[in-house]
Image 1 (cartoon, rainbow, N blue to C red):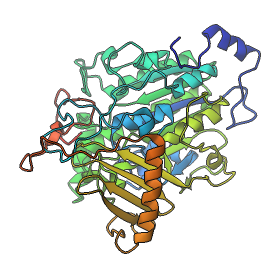
Image 2: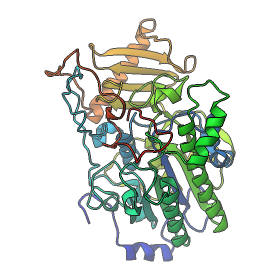
Image 3: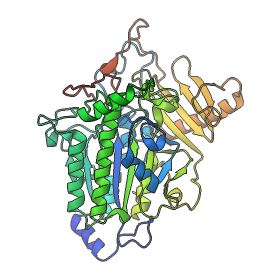
Length: 488
């Protein structure tokens, strides 16, 4: 066993389960065993890209049925504006400064690139092995654990920083099932979301008699898209009657393909009579690009709402108000403590968990007790420059490290699209939030970019399209109709 990990032998865990020493689920006190958990994490799905969040162009009937049976979190946030840091926050339950993964480490945009005004903070590329992941915590509670998809927290197919070294007993990368890097289709014409779901269903079938945790971070809906031909034609017909630039046929087809597989998962749970004791979570790793996030401001890579607002629904047994909404701000860091409480598993010793459990909201017992949320993104990616943010109540402050630490203040209740900067008209509120943000940065050891970049060239152009980085050093797929380049 690795240093710093809370773990037990498989035999001891099974023995504990047999004698009933593993705690019952907090979600259903009468359950014979802790609930099964399926966590579906989309890549680059924006806040309004599914029906239950108001999209009327894309058809997502299966995801919407989850929402009707579950609880919708209307103000859900990713813990960072791009994929790797949010995934690290989800796996660790910690804000970015604690684990040090601030962005995707991309050789195409090294620290000190010519268009960077400041020397950005260094970002780790691997989640430290000392971090006790949610998979390890659940495994210690008797769960079978499995990973299917995109990791982005350590390179390689095996080793201590890969899923297999971080608590997942079953590991399936796209490459394991015949897919080239970033391809949506394999050489035989199989679609990646379909094949990953095939593997999830095999795992569920095999482990139906014990608690299981299946983590499905799909490659979808990352661009460039390679949609299924029939779905693409369907949405091309629909788009011909619309003039909304957000209604992209290739993007919509990619989303519906995911929805079809959510339906397959739900149907399998029903067939195996597991529905009543399985929690299904559907969410995303960051906002979409600004083409798709309107009317919210900004997109992936930015700390404006469009870059960090995401869909989140949790469905499962004993939801107090199926189809209801929780309007409290929540974040990716909240998934870890929520799953611990659902599973009746103790938090790891000596590891700070920054999130809060969402179980009180699921059970309708009380409002979530949260004062504020934080983001720290001291890096460059796409259009974004190094920045931090705090949300406290209805107010959100963003600090931009270029140009002397400019600050912007918004009232999200009155101005959810962040069109009216209140920093000058409400200086006292701006100053108070800034002090709180600074205190949090000090407490967490946040890396603050301060030094001017000696390589900065004001005439240098930012990389465009697929060269913008931030997607795990991923290139395009194998091509296909509807393929569309966009920033990582």
